[in-house]
Image (cartoon, rainbow, N blue to C red; front, side):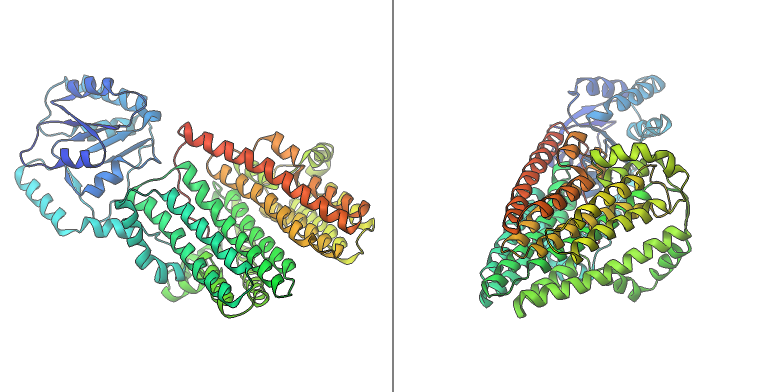
Amino acid sequence: MPTAILTGQPVPGSSIESELRSLGFDVHLASGAADTETLLARVPGEHRVAVVDARFVGHPHALRLGLTDPRFPLAAIPGAVTAQPAARQALTRAMARENSAGGGTVLAVDSLADRITAALDADGADVHRPELGSLVAAVPADPQARNEARQAVAAVDDEAVRLKSAVKARDGFVTTFFISPYSRYIARWCARRGLTPNQVTTASLITALIAAGCAATGTRGGFVAAGVLLIASFVLDCTDGQLARYSLQYSTLGAWLDATFDRAKEYAYYAGLALGAARGGDDVWALALGAMILQTCRHVVDFSFNEANHDATANTSPTAALSDKLDSVGWTVWVRRMIVLPIGERWAMIAVLTALTTPRITFYALLIGCAFSATYTTAGRVLRSLTRRATRTDRAAKALADLADSGPLAEAAAMGLRGTARRLPAITAPAVALLGGAAVVATAALTDFGGPWPLVAAIVYLLTSALAVARPLKGALDWLVPPFFRAAEYLTVLFLSAKADVNGALPAAFGLVAAVAYHHYDTVYRIRGDAGAPPQWLVRTIGGHEGRTLVICVLAALLTAPQFKLALTVLAVAVALVVLVESIRFWVAAHKVGAPAVHDEGEPA
């Protein structure tokens, strides 16, 4: 149980002790700095500890924000400071210094908690100070100031502020105006009944899977039910994040589940639509796979661009300045958010079209909409990169290399090409990645199944991929390398399975791409959580993007169409088992050992 140490002279009528207990703290009273240091030493090292001034006046939610957020090792608000186990040593040092300076006397004016916070700042510790907005947090020095602080507390509705802060400040049009106005109250209902964000996330996944099952029936009633349930799943998807913000229940495992389940829900729904269409005699598996590929590549563009510019220095761009200027014009903000077809708009469109039209029309609309938004966002980012004066860091280059997912073949070839790569212009990496990927995709799409040309193109793709990563990815457009690799691998699988022209090949390809895409998403979430990329043995075991592409082309050249379908199925199952087992092991272990809590605010796309 976390411990709170109340310091200084108690104030008659103060509710601070009961408020701390309501937040889950075991409260101990200390008369001064020496007593506080003694009590602090008695708190077990694996527990959170807080030092709070007994004269504190403020909103309960201000205390909650300052003292219970699991994402920050050190946090403070006026009159209170807290430390998680990872930061206990820093807090103990600061406390010892203040005790020595104060002589252990009872504090009459100065707040010991604030002095400890100042000492932590002087030591260079990273102390988080939450944005309180209209919430009050103060340590009044006299009765008049206390009375004024209490009046300020009474003038602000603590619960209204808490509900408002549960909703993301920046979200899509559909989410902002059609979901969040009531989903925040669902989040509060869940919080008051002890439900956790992970439970709501799981409920959202189950609802989406039921929706996919309804779509798979291929009946009009099933399609209508699927559309309704998909919207319900999205409401729960918004609720889990709002519940996390409302109750400050952030965790490493929760962020991973939230992000991973979003992809699983959407792609499972695509499969359900394809199965439903097949029951009606319409084969749309190629469209379903194409939609998954397009959506995954859009996300990789987002991830790569953000990682490339995560800590860029001298970061200036006229395009970015124009974007900021447009953000100051109200209507353009919503238009630009809708153009990128974020998850709310996308799922609403899918749900409505599922209920009213056919799976084929739904996929056509989805592909057209996502292609337009992908073009818009990618073009904007290319312009920003070309007009930006920035120096990319080693961290950014390492992240892009991890996102590239190069296997042992590309790594070995890259070692021999490093000297050549250093002499080539900066545009080389994305250019050769694009050319090599285009070659293997075009060959797979335009030649007959079973021919040798896709295999030849795959060998060329291996060499171009190696050249692309032979030197650190620090060029202005090097963030395009991972998306080019993703598109090349996924589209090669799509075209070869379509060319096989055998029943079941495209569903098998859908499963294989889904398994590989999961691995690529998992890589992103590990990097975001500062956990590093998946282990090298995993990347080598599943071959890297160039190795998998080469294997697929070899199988297509050597096997008959039915055998190729079976090989795709086996490969999909094998890759899925390896990446899922390792991913689940990693995230559960990280959660158990107390990895820093995070919260994924969600992707714009």
